[in-house]
Length: 455
Ligand SMILES: [Zn+2]
Image (cartoon, rainbow, N blue to C red):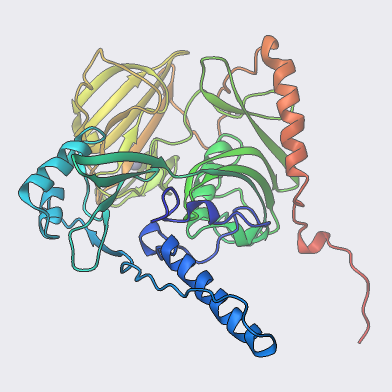
């Protein structure tokens, strides 16, 4: 049997279209190809020669005769597939395929060198290959999304080999003309290379990158547009292993915003505009990624107490149990139950700023007065404790003790890129913008001046 490429990984999606997504194939669906045994080939060649000489002998008397040889070929091996079911162990799967207890033991022992045999999740596919009706001589097992373990029977046990799924890197260029929200965009560019649900992921990421410049719940207009260059690592089955933006451009209400990533040495990856100004704010835009159901107001009808009163915070309609994140690092000043707030957490930040997170169903372990929290750290979960009609997060932002409206105030930005990184950033930026030039920023219908057609 042909070794090394029984799954034809190398052939997958390597045509001129690069990562073009064809019908999704997973490794277990690939037909297994076998090399015709050498004996069969020689038998065919020899019989072919015999036939040829017979034909020839019609025109000329045979000077010599070719001996015709028939060598019976062994039946080709067969492969069967099995899937690990919930509650089933790998040993049980092997056992069900006629392996002796010693074989099962030996196989599991080898597997253990690579991965705890108990940690295989339901759905893992096992391929067993062997003579028809006989014991499998090869077992192929998916260790994880990126590697396959092959076990081959030998006289004295099982030989193992791990093959890493080859990863292909591509650059995906997309444009989008927004119809109503970022979710409803008319896509252009390499749309055919997008996987299912992949664009939705980019919408989340893109909204994150510009969260400090654009309020995607209210600032987006029909005719706004974007274009992105994305670097992806693709598996042979077309699934995306990693992805990152190389550059983004967003046209929003007439202005064009750019985002170029840069990672400071030892730091995290951040986005900057073309001048190297940080796009990120010192605070996260929101503690939960959900719609604002009630904004900041000095006079609002309260549905529970049935009175007009100020709403000095922002409500996010998030499902019960949603993780709530600290919008900036700081020190917890309060964690517990506090009147109408219900279960709540308050955090003190720099510059006299305090944030409050109310109506929580639970407070995360370790979150207590005096504890340090990092930006983005989960401090609790959405609930409806205190004065709340249903699950939502009530978020307050105070500066020097006064409640502030986060949707209208200018929150401080993160520092611009330091001078010493600027020259490297500018080189990266130019390459990124170059990549982006491969797709057009879609023009709004009203911007489009086409030939006048009379009819
Ligand atoms: Zn509220």
